Image 1 (cartoon, protein in one colour):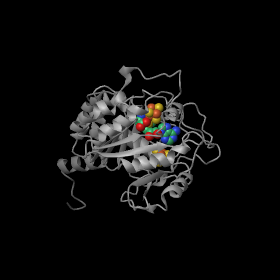
Image 2: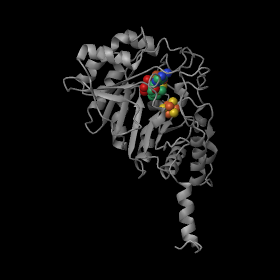
Image 3: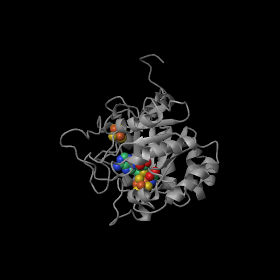
Image 4: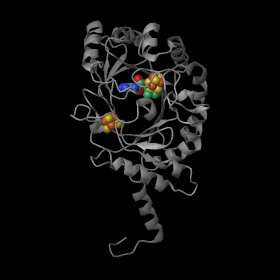
Length: 351
Ligand code: SAM
Ligand code: SF4
Ligand code: SF4
């Protein structure tokens, strides 16, 4: 087509489509290709770094996005280059019939990576249907191997159920598993080395996470956080120098290492001391349908009305997400003076 020629109606339609579904690039050049979907804010435990112990106001069931609405959202953003989906919560396995949602999302052609983050308590009874539905990866949170410490952190019992969940998931060799451990100073510091031994024994990579100011009780002040560097030192003291692994994915939040003897992988998510915001590619959808552009974002965009409106187009849904992405800040600013934690705690966003 020459510069003076007027494009045909078909060409114009194609161009309009390309513009509407262009990649979700923010003001800092970060392209957003990963989506975390919270399917519930409920949980069967009460981790002190995430939830309050009591006086919880959970969303009424009718306010949760339906599976059809979530599928609709994913189909729309997939057209704009979102290919990685993680299901989270609250505890996602508390959402009835979760396998049905997995099946719907696994069927979306553009979705290349479909993963779940869970506390593992209900995994033993659900893992086979989740795998059958098309789930490829599961991260299981495990902060301790000691029941007393588990109860101190989770304010509920249940370590045995988590371990049974891990065992059940290991029966599926096609499933990629990972353990996530959040470390709190003077609470589960002594669990770091036993957890690393356990991870090697069960051949599952483990990642240690720094405690971020996302606890519901707003107690975070940095003093309970053990830095990734401190955790790494404890591990190297036990296992010898760790061998850095090159990451193929620059948006990957963890730095991963191999143990000195070549057996097993350990990673560190140093979100507070070494923020990885400059390569962040994540957006989030809360259980009631709010788009969040950052864990620490103070604004949110309500996608629920569009998702419930049969007449709303995919372009309108992507447009709302683009607005959110364009309002994203460069970084979380935890270390900046005047930093304020977000209104929502982790369980209300979706970690
Ligand atoms: N309930 C599931 C679980 O615990 O795996 C999924 C949701 S949970 C919010 C997801 C992850 O967020 C967990 O691995 C948990 O350790 C992490 N998390 C929760 N609160 C956090 C905080 N204040 N700082 C850093 N990570 C946190
Ligand atoms: Fe529940 Fe996960 Fe939060 Fe723990 S971290 S309270 S398991 S949602
Ligand atoms: Fe991304 Fe916000 Fe997390 Fe930084 S704090 S990595 S910008 S979600």
